[in-house]
Length: 549
Image 1 (cartoon, rainbow, N blue to C red):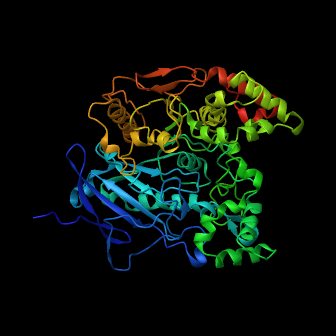
Image 2 (cartoon, rainbow, N blue to C red; image 1 turned 90 degrees about the vertical axis):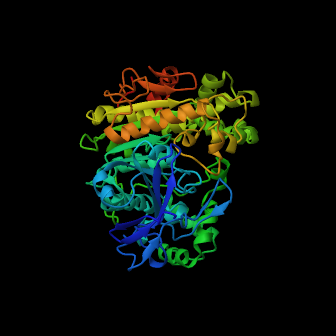
Image 3 (cartoon, rainbow, N blue to C red; image 1 turned 60 degrees about the vertical axis):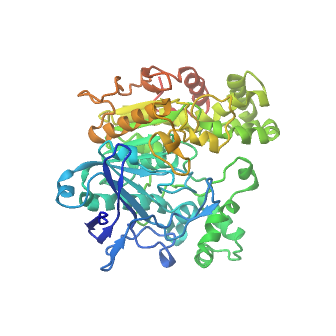
């Protein structure tokens, strides 16, 4: 006789899920599409999320996923989702009943990436079976994306960051309900990749006096990256409305129009908020987080990031930061396609955070090209070197700035830093982005399938005993060790055969994760860091405080 579907009682009501088998043969329990907020539609569009108090007496079927956030997707189909999208998924090795109440397993809450404009937490990409079989509970969440999640018009009480506030409410839901699944509400690790990693970091720095998590992992994304925050957010909101056909001039008229327009038009035509120049920069995600005014409704963050980082009383928890060895390899095809434009406008190679005066834009770009390419202009045979400029601008430098600020201003926080350089069968995103075969190492998001199974990427097809399988075991063991005790290779024994030492600014302590070895190295970015220190010292030294020595 088949097992009855598992039933769990949580605060809003009862839910039913499915029982499945983990790769190691043990059972696990999946509860998908659990609503954690009222649908953010109608008068709740562009507003902070409202908690869902009750399922209104129903036994809710949570055997399959529900709507994801309405977005343009870089993974087929091109457009997906619904405005009614605030659902989460819980995966646990603990079955329902008395045992679930006493288990108190560590909890890991995953925030997906996608540039704040695409993606979802669903299991087609993020199946956490290999994490769960290490003895943790995993929660994946959906949150509002694009203009529905990040539109900003403060004159009419639209303060932005709705997507981040969705994430925050999901964390509160976990605190209130995870014990029913066997989880420990006092041992929650927040982790994410790309925009998800930046989101996790933003939660560490948010205005919230009480955090609902106790550790954080930021993979290829931090709040100090120039990719994270909107520029001119009010202008973008007005430009989007005009692009969609609004004839009103006041913000009130614009808001009324945006309430009238379909959610599909708002989300799927959001590129209309970009200027022609911004579109040539590959800036295809106009709506992102903002710094809110202090008087905003339910504020998420109201101070500039460096100021928050340099506040000694800011959060002090164990944190992992990391980058992949060739993050911006995904830009290779775009660079080749737009090479002539980059030749005419070399200032595109200058990072925004450098704040180069107009008279020095060309000469500064020339210095950058000379350092990375030994050339005065970009050429096709230097594509690999050109992508490294963006890797350093968007990922490496911001991660080091975050690490060194945390090290100085929150010295009690255990910090860990890694570089992921594995190149094996589970590097699925380099295939998605058509990274040239001669590019070695791991591109942006290539680490994801070493933590999650994916039916979309056919990850189950890898061979037993291969490098990819071995590295998946190592990654999942380190991440879950960290969730359990705050150290990825605890002294009492991790079973991994190496020790991940805490980050020290003076040594640039970094765990290098590669096909051949997993080992500690010192200052893997030392020369590149010295180059950028000199440039920032000339134009915007405050970005490097504390100094990266």
